[in-house]
Image (cartoon, rainbow, N blue to C red; front, side, top):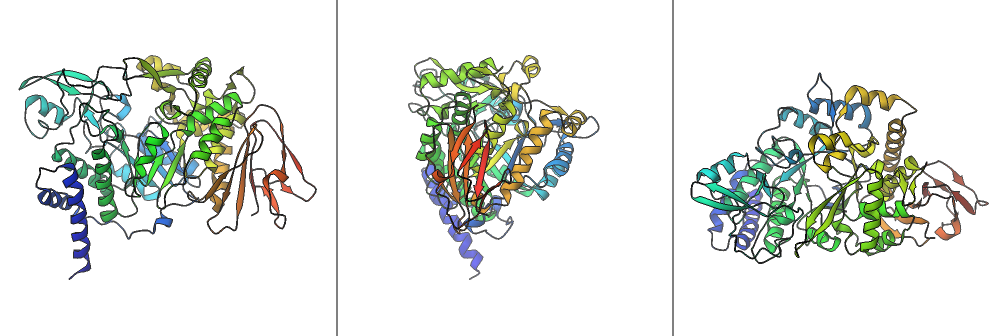
Length: 579
């Protein structure tokens, strides 16, 4: 028997197990055949050993397809030009945020998953980016646009679409449903069968799909196959925690949701080995960690708690919450890792800080960021109240001062935030507007009337080139220093995403941790002054091995036997290493 036949049989058997759990009353053998048929002739590469899925050379850029605009070029080509001219030696992967035609939410209300928004470019430009970088794309899996053909078909009562959407009755018990928004959950909709109430977790333009229908799952597997063909090798499962709904529950992280992730993992491991799955679950930390499963769900999960805790530490000079969280974080399982980020197209999520920061500390954070021009978005709680869901602010401006007000340390404080992220266990991900030190886009908020627009500025390519070339501009200073540190990081094995990490107990002014390479030959002590005053660091507190020569990789300063105390300036970062 051909070995591949054994492989196919094993995959078919595994798929049947997933499908029986999801659809116990369906013909799961037939469904498994349908799934195999979608992927049958696709096999992209030889599997990589788990320890080779990523390395310290990996670093991700997060960007919209049109974050940079040139009047003479389609945006995806301008993005390629920016990558080639400025980031080819700094990043290994690019997350192009939703690039399909959409009706709202800057791409997250998808009209047609099979097309590239012609305002951005076409599939050829998407594929070209994938030839130089690992390409990450969103599978907006929970909902589609009300303007999609599927939803138009739903209203008309024809397939595909008539049975694709989640309905509820006004009398259903929906009191426990977790919401990221304050708008009504149900949207009254006239259909060929009369008035229906469709489920809208996010907005009334984003209609939730009903994965209890296996054909909805099949549609998304076809989309994944299409994206694989066009070079996508990292899939971000957007809002996946909301995917499966059962009235009477909180409709979050239900067992069927985890089973869908497992099924997708089975398929990508079998037909596109080396593909990464990333689950986007902006929830409290203990819930987020469940998406590693038993090493059979996500390869990578977002380190959502990092951003609010890090910003809090830098605004207050207090490191206790950040240290406590760091010490409680488990190492990622073998074959898994974290995606570390401090800013994104959304904002700084506050749900991941629940249980980690007190209500008073959260309020102080909200008020401080508000004084620096930031805004807030709220969510509805089960008791009908509202709670802060996220801070909408450009990270560069969120760090323009402390709880005492603005000061002269904005650039240093911001560089410190990004250097902390670079050093932590996991893969660092830079939002393009952090790299470029983009300020709050208040005009964008006024134009769209959406708070999230504050951190979704669109740069003019010529103006950006001029700013990056101007040595006196903060854009030049921040971008130049961050890319220098990104390139330094790639050369040091202790920054492998799965290298050993240990939190150091120095004075309250410092946030520090130790990283050690997997072969134990190199150590790096990552030390960060989180205050606006100069601090003394005693090298004896780091337990440096006396037989090794030590130096700071960031500044290049070498330490001799007479160096016992370092003066660490406000927000200075040190990577003290023996190689």
